[in-house]
Image 1 (cartoon, rainbow, N blue to C red):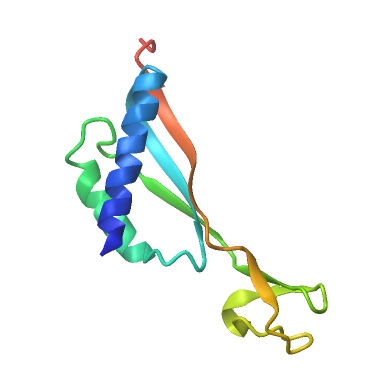
Image 2: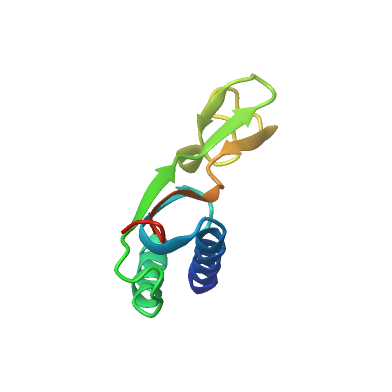
Length: 119
């Protein structure tokens, strides 16, 4: 389950950001996850819910996920199409000369935080 490692990395990144910006508590985290990133969302959320209760910085912070749909580009006909229902073969022309444009991303999009300067 690589979702465990992903959550540990996200929390480490949040600690780095918190230190850099004088943050005492993370209120929520929003991730962007591509449709074909290989991340199992249910497992990621379970890992987040487990680890957030063990870390004072993120304790109780909800995790929000925005899914990014996978889109593939065909170099033969210069059209795009939805990747998941069609795979590598272009539904417009039948060519396999394609590449993924988006849908493999994984990023921290937004962090809501409470500053140490806040009374």
